[in-house]
Image (cartoon, rainbow, N blue to C red; front, side, top):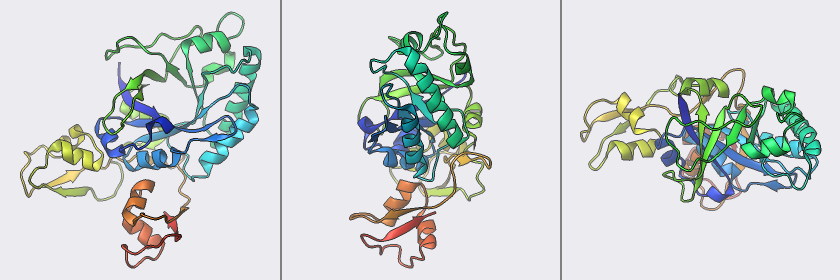
Length: 329
């Protein structure tokens, strides 16, 4: 059975070194954006654009509160994510894991309101994230299965085996017949993240993941590949981490032995949105803060110093001022 590894993150995973994460082989990430109609994750911005700059496919998720108006929650999520002019590559996610003292007779129609409203805004069917027992207890109709319309939505199942081994599959809740994503651990360890992190699997091949995301596989961009000159102390691992790719990708592009002075080809890890979907291309702006450099801003937004300088007619890339408003291409 083919699967693709990924993670999901929130405020509890702040300060992520995304190139290191990508170099471990992670291919996608879901990032917490909002909760209810009053909370915005303060790390969403950094995680969202940091993951993009490292070449991971991204999706945004909303933590649903069953005791808060579903329409307001949907609008709150949509408006926040759209404010970044970047809707990501993967479909949006409804995180359904707490009943908030509500009965399923109220939860089920509220969920449908959120799903319909978000689908209308993004033009894509959202993913439903939940656990086996929550779905059986709070998202089931007479007979024990989910509402008939639920089968139209991809299922991201949270289920944690005592000991995960490659090739395992989760147990599906009553009435569900397919899983698209599986969160199999909430105490994972990934290089580049200094905290426990949720570990996930996509049910399919890497090619199928890119198709699901509406994105083109890495390496299909016409841009000229980067080059790296090998210096003393370099290893395939240190070079891979520097550029946010896996060791296997680096070695595949450069099968020769590592020698000082060699020029290595660095394969491009960035996911390119398909013409009919994925991220929008409208520019956004950024106000320069104390300590910012064009280099750090470029990394933050997944672009280059040259592109920012060109978009803002900057002659000296080392000279920007606090309060300056930059257009980010």
